[in-house]
Length: 116
Image (cartoon, rainbow, N blue to C red):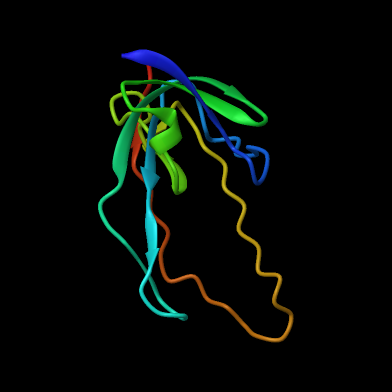
């Protein structure tokens, strides 16, 4: 594989959750009618090596001129868990709707101790 720079031409990359090590994909969108678009399976580009405001560097064997469409990414599940780690957590819930009452039925979480 080779390092390939993929330029984002229409806007800057402004996503704080995008990290080096994430996996880059692209999706070709085809127009079916004036009001509907369709997409097939995303195409894997490779792992992200570097991120800048107007490009991402990816380790891939794909020709960068053939990478066109909607860019997206996924996280490595081995590194980015969704569970909370630690000894305590603090949660603040707010209802900003002054016209309607709200009621909390249940709150739950999954917590695992990070160290002993």
